[in-house]
Length: 387
Image (cartoon, rainbow, N blue to C red):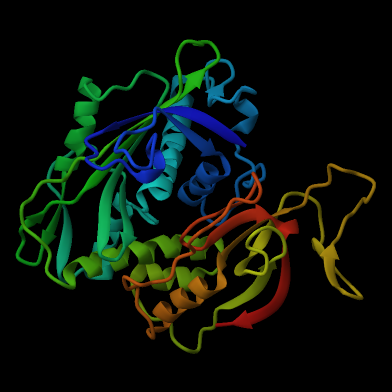
C-alpha cells in the first residue's frame, strides 16, 4: 500500500537523487511516496524484541486507522484516546519514518538507539574513541551507519502539530546534537554528521493540514578527526549491535549475547537454524535463515506431502484462517555475521549487503541488512543447519 506525504529539506547541499524532481537537477521534489511495508519493517525492528507484534507485522499495524485516500491521513483525530497515548504512538511512528527515510534515500543501513551504545561502551571496550554526554537533556535518538567507516547521528520526531525549520522547537531539536560528543583517543571532539527527520501526521478532523516529512542535517560539535582504525571500531560496534537485535528476533539468544557484548562464541556452542527459499517474485530462489511467527491456530503450520511440504490448514473451507509471518536474514549475510561471532570474520567496509532489492508485494519488505518480513506462504523451508 502506497501513501504520499509532503517533503521539505533543509541544509542538504546535494539533494539525494531519489528525492529530486529531475535526476539531473539539484532540486527537491515537494512530495514523497511511501510503500508502507518499508516503514513497518523499520517499526518492527525498532520497537519489538522476540515477541512479534499483533496483528500480522507484514501489514502495517496502523493501516486500519488510515483514511482510504492517496495521502497519509488518520481517521478521526489520530491514534490514541489521550494526549499521552497520542504522544507515544506518534513518537513510534516518527522513529519508523526516520529510519525508513534514512535507509531509502541516504543509504544508511544500520541503526542503534544512542542509549544502547552509551550503555554498552564499558562492555564493548571502545579503545580508540568514546561517546560522551556533555549536558543533561535530550540527545539524538540514533547512532547509525552506512558502513563501518561512515556513521551518523539521527534524531526522529513524530507529531500532529505543525513543524517548521524556523520554529523555536526545531531550534531545540538542533541543540540536542550539542549534548553528545564523539571523542578520539586524544580526547578531542570529532564532528559527526547528523540528520533530523520530523514527520507530521494529518488527521481527518483537520482536512486542510497535510502530512509531511521534514529533514535537516546538522553536525555534533568538534573540529578534530579520527585516525585510520578509530572510525572502523565505532562503526563495527554499531553494525554489531544492529545485528544483535536481529539475532534476538531470530530466537538465537547466544548469538545475540555474543554480538551485544563483543565476545567470541566458543566452538562448543552451535547456532542451529532453518534455511528457507523464497519461492515467489523477482528474488525467487534466494535463501534466508529464519522462521515464522504463527498468527493464531494450533499445531504446525507445515505438513509433509509426497512432493515435500505444504501449508497445512485446520479448515480448508475458511478464508480467514490465520497463517504466519516469516522473519529472516539472507543466508550469505547471516553466514558473515556468524563468522564475526566465531572470530573468523570482521564487520569491515566491504561487509555484504542485500542490494537492488525490488518490491514484489505490498505486505513484504526486504532491507539492505538482509532482513525480510513476508507472509510465510512466500517461502519454503529447504534444510536445517548448524553454524
